[in-house]
Image (cartoon, rainbow, N blue to C red; front, top):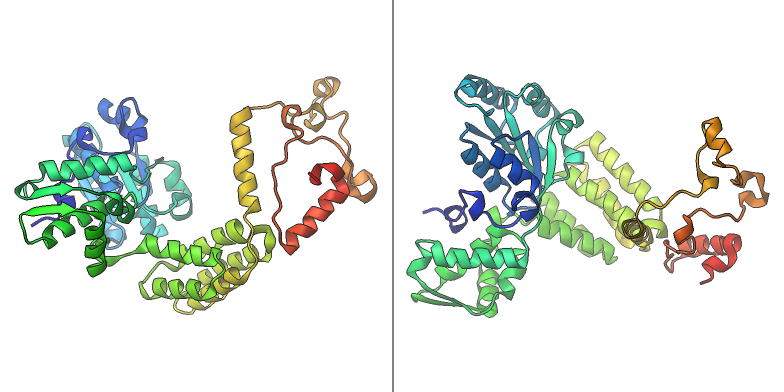
Length: 423
């Protein structure tokens, strides 16, 4: 018997739950599908949000041959074989055959290279699915030939709609008398993942011997504690463990961090995935409190690429412990978020004239760059002048945090700018 998640997989966009920004009325992907012509694209999003389902719905809607490859089990020969089959089927369909590649981030460079010609010439329409940032994992020539669409974790309303639909429409669940009294635990454990939610529902229902099933938070928690792998596909807790790993580093617990690192190493996690998260953590969580952390994290990444596995676990461990024991600051992370919020709030404010570039005579006549003071021409390589647009010139964006490194930076700013940094 098929699992509930498979039995409930939608066949049309009208049955598809979530991702309204892509497939809702008037949304970009919906328009392309309704028009019957799509270009190659990559779907990027967490597990269980409908990437594979969306690809299958598109193929059904367009009535075009649909080929599937898994990046985990397929090689270059498999890619070429599929492309040859697609060429032979090209004449029987107005639209190009669709080639869906799940976990495309696991494709090697040579595998991705073998796709380029077919995608460029329209032999196939590529739909890739990935849980990883394509900018890191997909080669630039292939990425440039594809649109990128970002899928989001399902919202509470989406998950509740899915839960209600499962109980109401699934032929097997309809045979049981199911009452949902509480949903908080189901929503919390599913974490926006439709597949997890349905796995949890199926586990709870199957664990009840009576025909009548009452679902409460207590029952859900109890069942999952008895069978923790049941709500995680193949027992792979990829996102939960990386979350625990990063939070242990952020929380300055080297023991916790190294434990979760060991869990990932033993679980066969991609070492490059771990190294990238260390680089992000060094910039986001340690930041200006210890700028050397970012240097070490980058060096770790480079070393890992050079020495490979299993020796690569050692620089990963070294960097993990270094980041966990470093002082923490997210002031740079907060500063760029505040600056982006300010830009969105105020729009394209004009650049002050004295800061503008003046490559032409006319621009010089208009005053571009005329009042600019070259800092290196002044004592201490500093001169007090305005660098923000007039409308926000008094705004403070970077807020230093209380650690030795940033206190030193703050004192320097106070000496240079005086009152501005004493506020």
